[in-house]
Length: 202
Length: 336
Image (cartoon, rainbow over all chains, first blue to last red; front, side):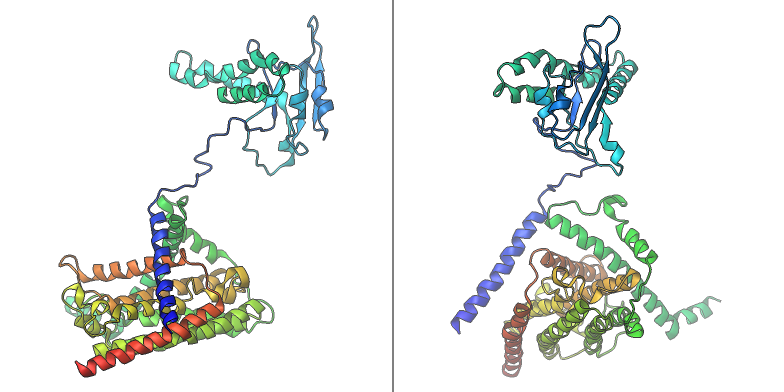
C-alpha cells in the first residue's frame, strides 16, 4: 500500500521534471540550419565530383589528355578527348565527360593523375530531376567558370572590396599547381595537407 | 429609424444569429491558428524554427493548409456506410460548437447564460466519443475500427474521474451555472477554486485530475491512442480525405479550446482579474491560452502511453483519488 503512494509520488514528480527539461529547450536557440537560406561551412576535405585544374596564366585546363584517369576509373565514367594544336608540345583537352550517374567518388582518377590536373570539387548542390544533368562536360564547366570570373572582374575593375572577394579564387587554381610535385614524391602524409590547402583557398 | 434598428438588433433571433456567427468564427480561427501554435510549439521544443516560409513567421500557413484541404476530393471509399461516414465529422464538430454557447468569456460576454451550463457541456461532450466511434466504424477499415474501440474504452475510463471531479466542484460551488461559478471566485487569486485549500486541501490535485482527463477526452498526446499514427495509420481518420479530415482536425482543436475554457472557468477564476488592470476577457483568454500552451507542451514532452498504461492510470489512480477528493470535500462541507 505504501509502495503505491511512493510510486504515484515519484511518477507525478517525474512528469514535472520532464516538462521542466522540455521547457528549458523551448527557450534555447534554434540548432537547425535553414538550408536554402543558410549553409554550413563545407569541411576542408570534402570530396565532390572531380573537376579540371586550370593554368593560372592562360586560364586553360592543364590536362594534356594522357587518359590515365580514364583507364583508372573502375566504373568507366570518364571519357577524355583532346587535340594537338599546331606547334604545341602537348595535347589539349577538348572534351572531358564525367558520367556522374556511375561515379562512386572513389578518387582513383585523382590518384592516377600524373600532374595533378584534376582534383575534387566542392560542389554538393547536385539535386536534379534529369539524368542528363549528371553527365557533365568538365571542360565546358571550367570554361564557363573562367568566363564568369572574367566577367565579374571586368565589371568591377578598381573596386577593391569586390576584387578581394574574388581574390582567393585565382590562387585557388594556382596553389595546387605549384605544390603539385610535392604530392607526387612523398605520397601519403602530404596528400591531405595539399588537399586541405586547395579547399581553403577556394 | 434608429429605434426600430435597436429593436431589431436586440431581438432574440438576432442575438442568437450573432452568437452563432461569433462562436463559429472564434472556433474556426482558433482551430486554424492553434495548428500553427502547435507546429511552432513543437518546433521550439525540438529547437527548430517551425513553419516560416508562408508569410511572416509562417502566419499564413493555416490559410495555405485550408486551401489545400478544401481543394482535395472528398473520397467516400467503396463499401462504407455513406450516411454515417459523412455524418461523423459533423457530429464531432457540432457538440464543441454548441457547448461553447454557455462558456462565459466575461461578465456580459456569454452566448447563453443558462443555469445548467455545466451539465449541458458534459451532455454534449459525450457525443464527441460516439461520433469518433461512428467515424471509425463506418470507415470499413481495420485500423479505424481498432481505433474506435480504443476511443470508446478510453473515454469511458476517463469520463468517470472527470465527472467525479466535476461533482466535487458542483458540491463546492453549489451551482451548475458557469457565470455563477466564476462570480464565486471573485477577489484575489487565492479565491480561485484551484487555490481554495480551506474548502478541500486536495483542490490542486482535483485540477490535475481534471486536466489529465481533459487531455484523454480530447485524445491528445500522451493519450492519443485513437490516432496512434505509428500503429494505426491515422486511426479513425484513416479513410477521410480533404475537408472531412479537416473538420475532424478542427474539431480536435475546438474540443481542446472547450476543455481549456472549462478548466479556466472551473478552477482558474474565469474572467476574474488577479491584478486590477485590463478587461476580464483578456484575463480569460490569457488563462485559456496558457492552458492550451501546456497542452502543446505536454504533447511534445511525453511519449504516447501504452493502452494498458492508459487504463491503469484511470482505473487504479485517477478514479480512486477523485473518489477520495469527493468524499473528503463532502465530509469537510458537513463538518466545517
